[in-house]
Image (cartoon, rainbow over all chains, first blue to last red; front, side, top):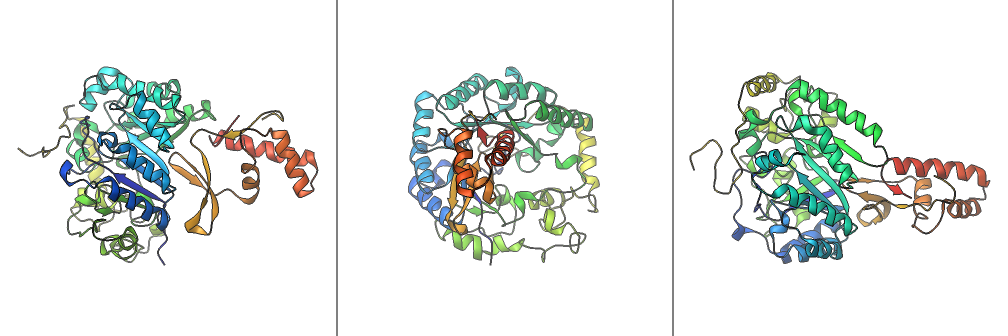
Length: 365
Length: 90
């Protein structure tokens, strides 16, 4: 018996006006013509709720780049799912925000790239974006929506974490997610420009601890230590195929949003199979379930069912083998790769390869 | 939280039944969900933005035939804990 998933990530589109160099989308972005239509998404949401999902994250790319975002939001809410919108905010106006709230949206998670406008707009690669985001936050609050501020942090903005926390409070967010960049896809290509130093990280951790105490009851701060300075890996997605599934813009059903980049997989597609069949029966979801697939030192490790071997995408990105122990674990023979990367990054420059459709990082396309 | 305070679920928090898992009650919010224990559930089901803490305590004291002072202490502690975690506001 396979436990049902708790949450669905619906990546509605890869279109996005921003060009963040750490984007979690795959390097090979999906063209608009290949996107699922709203009717198919409605079926996916109904299947997700029947399967056991309680929450859906409407994400992208930028989900509000879709003209049918209201229909999609309504169908998610009507399926009985707690409906989150993960947005950059720059395409929202008062009418759209009110309509989204009316369509049953429960929560808006708004990204900011920095607390300081010039830096934020350089990182996001979108002039004029920061002010639009602040306005989107105000509109979400006005519409009665719960608001999370999401700050992806890295070497080039981590020193302004105190200002980001102040910004979350000033915008009336109930929650702040301080998310260290995860290094695969676009972020891996930009790793030298993004990896924080140990000193930056320690200062940030202390900042978060102080703010949590000072803002208890006013602001919830979610903060996870980054893998590159860790001794033990994360239970990525709570374990492969254990709690979470994602559907890509073109309909592929994935155990995590980055898994599409792993070679040697035939991921099921919602155009061809039900979400339940994908979750319970597909080879892709079953491949890294449980512990039988694990190599040493995971096999037999007391933490095997705590961290589930870490992140498959990070294992592949760093070792070329998706079935390897995540090098974030100090027991991995390749754990030194992370310290090597931190050392290399400390000597590197600040230039980005921006995320753009048709661009191949490191390539000449 | 004072006896006259009117607690409500914080913005974005929902109390729902989980049909796929035997109809248990779950609290859903931004990026989180938890299953309240029996006592927390009894309290949360009375948190509606209209009842005061005092009214909630009276109802629970009547239902469980327990001394009001005892229930008041428990309910206040529980609501303050939930408020600290951003689940309840007043």
